[in-house]
Length: 131
Image 1 (cartoon, rainbow, N blue to C red):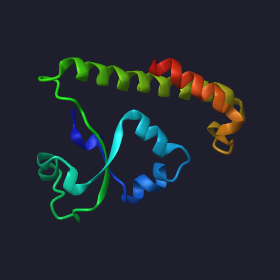
Image 2 (image 1 turned 30 degrees about the vertical axis):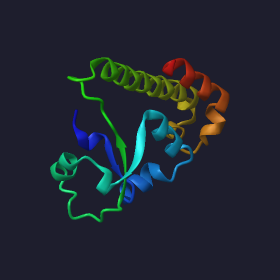
Image 3 (image 1 turned 30 degrees about the horizontal axis):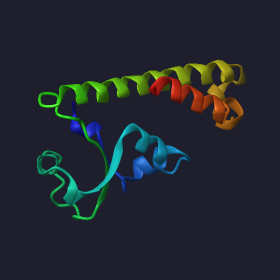
C-alpha cells in the first residue's frame, strides 16, 4: 500500500484545517491504529522515500503501521479486515446522515452533527462494525 496514505504530518495546515481541529478526530485516528511518531522514529526507508530528511528530527507525524504481509500474514489480514470494516462503517454513516438531512437542502451543511445522530447511535454503529 502507498505509505503516503498512512502518514500524516501533524503540522500540515491542510490537515489541521480540514480534520485536525475537529472534535473527536484524534480519538478516531488512534482507534484506527495511527500512532504519534517523531520524524526520527519513522522507518528510514519511509523518510527517504518521502523526502523527509530535511525536516526537523522532532517533527511529529501520525503513522498507520502496516504489518508485513509476507512475514506476518495473519496479522496483516486482521489489520486489513479492520480497515475494510472501518471503511464500511463510514460509508453507512454517510448514507444514514444523508437520509436524515437530505430534506434540509445544501446537504445539511448548517446542521450540527449532534442534531443528526446521537452519540449512542454512533458508538453502537462503531462497535458493531469493529467487533
